[in-house]
Image (cartoon, rainbow, N blue to C red; front, side, top):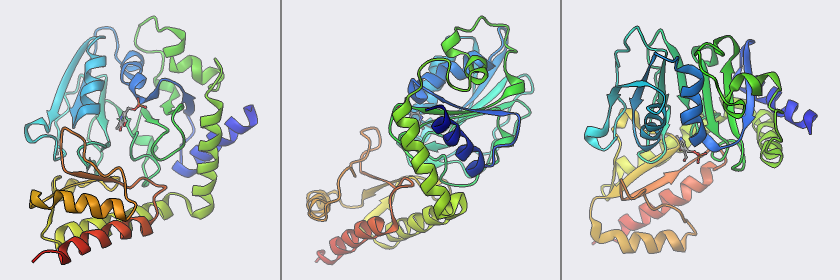
Length: 312
Ligand SMILES: Cc1ncc(COP(=O)(O)O)c(C=O)c1O
């Protein structure tokens, strides 16, 4: 079990190019526990944390961090139901950290730039980690629930810069202390073995096929195919700002709602399920995580073209 977990950690380091001085951990509690745990380990007793609010998951992170001290929301896209990514966010110089969500699973928006700050950068990468190259050295902390691009639910991947730990002046409970998990190499308590094992197999698959560069190209091809059809076919309209469109979660609506039942029937006939948009956005959401092949996207695009042919 230890050798297997070590292999999983080594694969994460190799595939993402994690520099020395970082610990790679597999913890429990989901990304949702990280909302609180990240602030607990990085917000000093009288310090201040900065957040970019790009949706439900960012808001939840802000809510949990507020339990611990002063939090400033530096920018928010709530004014347009989170359909865009705020740019050129000014970060005050007195922040302990800046937290942002790289991909907004519900709204279909994604950061294609790294926010500028002198503070420690913290990112929730739950829904786009391993989908594209990242520069780990930009970050003090990266966290991601396993269940999208990595493996089964149960493990949460944490990548943390060791030298930043232990500086808050807080008495941190052991299970919530990155330092303790890092010192014990994720074996402080029984780790989520099955989830780590399947994550390890996924990482082996990713490496064997060409790693992040391969996956990046594959995800771009999927996004080009589906957004291309959404833009070409007048029956559909994307809901996110074009430049901020997520490659993982594609949100779109029908331009004429009268087609809803027909489109749903055609999707079912093509064996496509799970396309209903989140209730806060409506419409449709096609999630195209790493495991989804281009061929599956083509099936959806074919149905969209078929719907077009039924119009009088
Ligand atoms: C970006 C993001 N952050 C956090 C979460 C919450 O993750 P978990 O269910 O592992 O707590 C999700 C779940 O979908 C997510 O997409």
